[in-house]
Amino acid sequence: MRLWSLHPSYLDAVGLVALWREGLLARKVLQGQTKGYIHHPQLFRFRETENPIHVLDFYLKTVHDESIRRGYNFDLSKISPCESRPPSLLLPDKQLEYEFLHLLDKLKERSPRQYSLLQQTASILPHPIFQVEPGDICCWEKRLFYN
Image: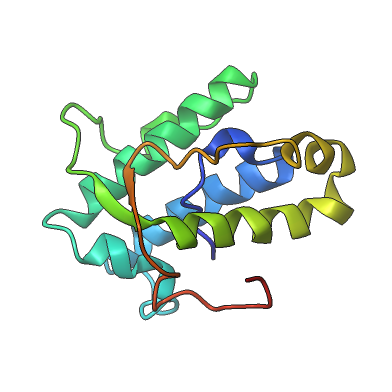
């Protein structure tokens, strides 16, 4: 499970569909409707909020908006209406950079065209739920080999 801190527009089709499905799974986990994934590190930052489901639904609403922009048909009824914006979650800049490199690594093989486009990115945009601040890679991140 990966709930990207990056703006969903960076994801290729496979990545965007996976993000939607994994976000819905995360929602079920946070609601106590699964036996697995209950200690998954990607859920840590959502669990720290006052209303994790509301925050995750807002996260997923942005993913849904990106799907609509691309002409996909994700089922919005799977999340609650997002009437009020949740508080911004803080995101260390090194975490954002790490995830961008991780995505590039995935796209190199899976989607060379998207990889080529993203290599030209000068400034990495976060998912709108996050506010970037100076800092290191998050302690919950499973680090691979990027620095």
